[in-house]
Length: 320
Length: 273
Image 1 (cartoon, each protein chain N blue to C red):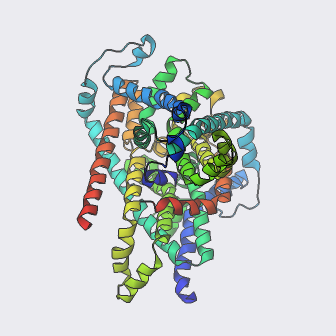
Image 2 (image 1 turned 180 degrees about the vertical axis):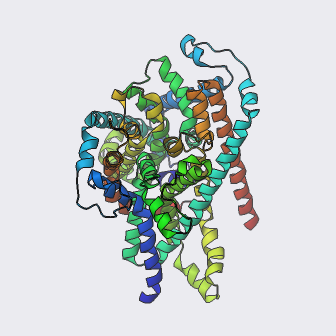
Image 3 (image 1 turned 135 degrees about the horizontal axis):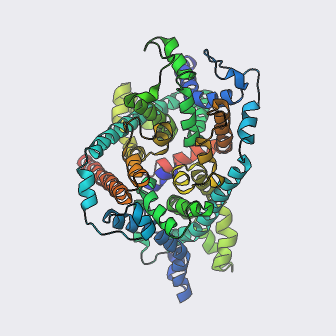
């Protein structure tokens, strides 16, 4: 909720009648108020970010932890990371996970929001309470439940799948022995956990569309699909856009579900960029390599966001 | 009308069942007798009820100690973030000053930087001051993501309070601080509560930072304890799931209590596009 508010709220300057008049003290008040935040930002965000960039240009290995010294190596870390086929496999895997997660989230979320619009009040309360509870589940707990749901011997979902008889016998099926299936479980977990936010946001946005528009469309003889296409979608456009962007960022960086379920295994087969950077830094003790991977990830996301936002604006102008 | 809604209603019930099943299964498993958890044919109702799994989870290791660690970190995070953010949000919403725009842009950009990128420099930073495996050190790392979003959200709440109210109070002889104390702060209370809840939960739920920064078992917070949870006989599924239930329960209750406002609040946030 908050993130969406953050992203879409307008950044208009406030009315400042109170501040303009008044003494010198009044003019200094805002700096006094924001001072602690500026200092805190410099300490917990500014310094670490600079350190991250600096780190990626050094060779900071396990020895540097104790000596505190690390030679400057320029862009060596970046050329090394980009020259490693592991990185490209990880990037591809991250892309697949992210696109599947975001696609699944948007499609299912949209359908659920549309469903919430059509049901009776009691059913709406039921479904939204269920969604809110899923939203509330801490990721760590959700991951532990996932592991238990798909436990090879006694996992209830293996039993259900076997009983349903479509996919064959899953009664002793170990999902985590194959990277593809483990990734599937991870994606399912991210989608399940992320669904409430997407569905409820879209539902809230749909509720804001004036009913007159639908009446007018109905009078003009528009069918269900063309109403969705020409009325609902254009109005939901900005909200959908922000949701996609947020979900891409979140899914690319998700760590807990992957780390707790598979630790990136088997054989690195479920490692995505977030986990890759962690492994490089803390398992292989190559802090500079990890920093380089983190920076590449942030840059990729930044470029993607800029391109995406510009495209959106281009579309807006084309319509206007 | 009635018949028209029968189909969507049925779908909604089915979807609800599917969506909530993992949460239900967590509680169902936790409440079963330990002997009945590992059965070839799953029993969908936890009957007879038993608190044995909870007892195993709570008595294995110093559970209350981990609760204390988690509470210490989460509550401190909320308090520090609120104090810093309250001033900043008033400055941003009520004053025009040099660097205001830059600060706002920075505030948005900073939220795009993921935790997994920050964890490496923060680790080295805390290590150089000897604050690794030090519970309060974790608070610093939580500020990196709690602070920007707290400032941004509170700024929205401050901006929502009509300026006329403060002006009226000041005309009536309240000082600037008096106007803040008697007018703004009470009106800001819901915003402060909402922001605190979200800040608390993001600290309470964090696994990544706690896992990287806390080394000795004695310093674990609840999420780290939960993932590492094993009894002397190895993995006890019933106790692990009961532990997950204990850890989730406070958050589930809070979300249920604010459920209506949560969905309503999204309506307010969603349309300002």
